[in-house]
Length: 472
Image (cartoon, rainbow, N blue to C red; front, side, top):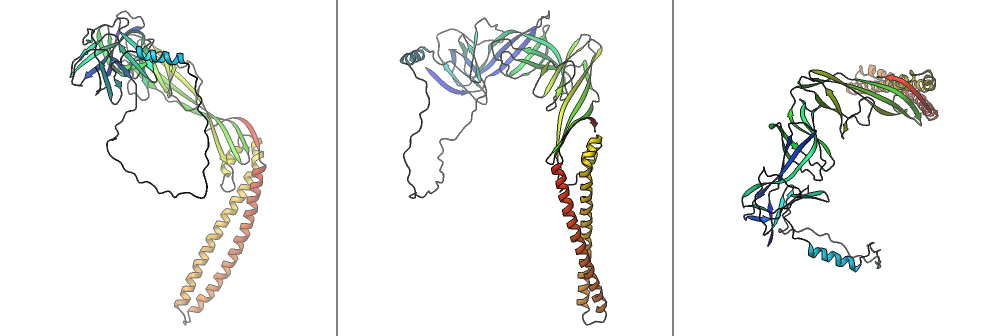
């Protein structure tokens, strides 16, 4: 008989035990917590635990859903012609391959009980005549007690001995016992308020460690607990488990300097290549009676390169990890230098005032001053004309307002002797407006000529200059 039923996900939990005599290794024991909620006993079932992150969801397939269908007219303007499509490339299969595959399927064992680690789980069971029972947390694993299999992005722990879990009960099934390299360190980063005691664990086993909690024991005493993400064979991972109250890490005031290395301008595009040098200083203080290995996490800057010693012990996507040895009641310093190339692109265009920017660049070398001076002078003249045109437009607006006010007064005093004064004022204002318009027109012609001159100078200006200038 076989069955399938929804059950809670199984959970992983571990215990890491360090021997009294340090040898660079720790015993890692792992258990899977399995819950039987199907309402029936699992007597002597073959149990297999599968972990991964499958997509899972609920969709109301039983509910009728209606959609509006668009009305499409029948096409009679063009006729469709039959066509052929290329066949998919396939691998030729021989009769021997087919027979071998069928034989393998016939000889394959029945599915074992499985649980998926994710949002939901399915567990199926198969009866067995083998003896067995619930594993206790203290049961030691024997060689061959668990086999591991990887497929796609999942991994499986197959328990070789049958398991019994009664209905509405839970069991801790041992899935792992390995002697793995483990190093005690202290981990510090900008994101953590306090340094943390951690273990640098290297998974040299053939098993994938599923995500879960762990407890750590030293000299037979509980030392702390923490969480771990999945660790595949060959991976090395930092696992923190307690606060290190004896270690203090101080990040001193750093310095940022920029050096301009290259300036180029072609077709009105000016590009500055600058190198930013960032220096960071750390002081690690160890107040403990024993030496500490402190891992300092230094946040990586985008596109930066390290230019200091020592090299990081490990590099992650967001940080460099430096190893610092701190002797008992001593301090140790760490200096980190990073070089980051910066590229600034500026478009030089007559429509935007770049006079101050170009003047600042021209001060770097006499050669740049000589090349940029004609353009700077031309842009200065263009800016002066733009300011004069703005003043002329403002003057015209003021005269127009005076003209409108005089016309209103003439209308209000129509037939009155006092209206004559406003008529004279109106005539004088109109003469001023005509003169202002002529002046503005002359200024606009000068501006157009100045703009054409600037555009010509920009088009002709082309250079590449190497520099070594410190900038703000």
